Length: 396
Ligand SMILES: C[C@H](O)[C@H](O)CC(=O)C(=O)O
Ligand SMILES: [Mg+2]
Image 1 (cartoon, helix red, strand yellow):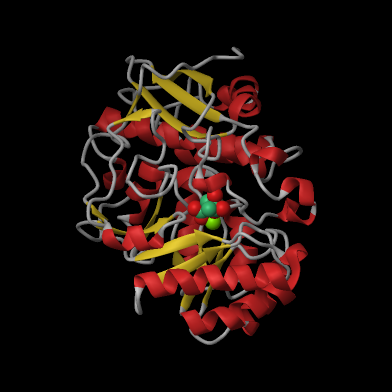
Image 2 (cartoon, protein in one colour; image 1 turned 30 degrees about the vertical axis):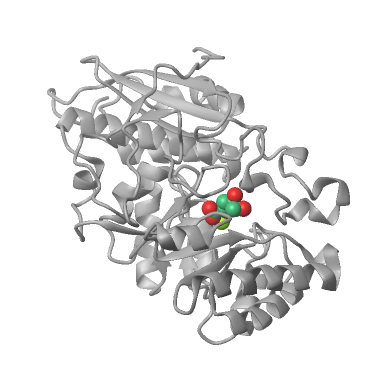
């Protein structure tokens, strides 16, 4: 039974597509790319998987595109990382909770998607799929109301966003106007003292290029243990490391609490891109870390991120979402505890600015001089590029 007024459009159909290469699966790059150049990971304990993350399958999922069509023909869409498995979940399981419902039923739809998948979901690809549906629903609602998503979230608290850049070249990021540069860590504990020295040498070299004051951070992509992370952070303080990100595997909440106690004063401990839902982030917030970094395309979408963010605010913790382009920007601009945003440099050598999800979206905005005024185009303000081939592997 519908809960909204008779004039509220209802959802006519939910469709899920997949796309291969680049797009929302930004690790799915071909040829040389800094993002696949000997980056430390949980798999680095196995020498044969050290050189390339694609070698262990970081790009197996691919992009999921969720389209939601209202009964007046308006279509909203969103993209995330989930590929065919996500498309199956959307078509065969989640669509039933949307079709026939008012487009305004965001909370009920989210709750039903989450509760109905608990027996095989809770995190990971199921939450990616739920996020994709939630974001597509926000896009649809914005298009129907002819408002940008940030207006649906209560409106902006600042005129423009400020960005730090993630990539191999913080020195170039500085020239491009970013407030900081986050570099991948290349060597994990299995590469011993020599690897530790190489990590520190890379940081020292980058500090000498960018000078004092410019933020430098390390993205450790779940590759370390508490002992190594503590030693690395202790020695990195000399080079002014601003934060150490995702040092440990996401399930090691106790390790994060210990690391937070052990890093040098003033160095921030951050993580959260592979965490999901208010319950996951509640555990993370209790560790006392400084910044949580949910990915809105993976943590449960905007509906869940609003809850996570309110909880973080009450803990005095900043929320600086992981990547996710427009899906993050419309959120960050509305929150006082999200003071800046991440821009992932998807250019192969991180020397030029290209849209994060290129070539999948048309109208995807990018920072200029490290700043961006979020466009006021309805929904998330982007369109699917018709030249990118997509497939609908399942129907319902
Ligand atoms: C660079 C990191 O290893 C990863 O590819 C992206 C990431 O974790 C981040 O942007 O944060
Ligand atoms: Mg990261």
